[in-house]
Image: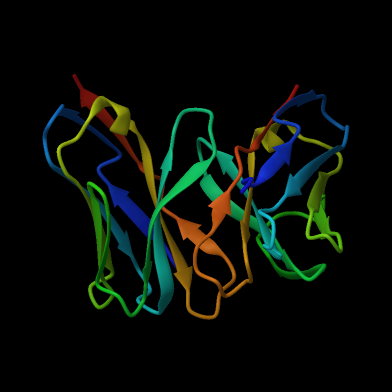
Length: 113
Length: 112
């Protein structure tokens, strides 16, 4: 059974650009959540989707957005990139929002120059 | 607001030693607690999940305990090996919450 797949694994952007990251959950998992990991702040919750609906959002500016498709795949977008957006972006999936265990992908490493 | 603390931030032990990693949380109204392992530049690997009604979970050389009333969890690693070297993260899911709150992790080095 394939795990959570995130693409791209690495990317470099410049300030002001925008970026889209993709996440394919484990087959059968319908809940997808996103986290940002930085050395200073650690892991912080971005948002969570279930059945194509955003059910919860963390304390991030509106430049961070996401969506979920009918096949449960999810994308997140960051517009007007800032240097501080450089981070590892991790996607996690679970069968439903209330199912306990989360399974994470390898992450997308974003560097903003 | 839930806060999760992991002490120590780093730990170095000789191979073969048994060790305990600590995790504490401020709000005891939790749904579950999950321990993860993260290798450098990699994603998170789930190690153990403890539901709020459980006291402990075991998987191989790993044993995790949960004491909700005191807001503490421990991860016990028996007979440590160099391959156990990684950062170990504790995460709590609050009751009624959809998100995990993570600690900053404990970086473990097992010396051959």
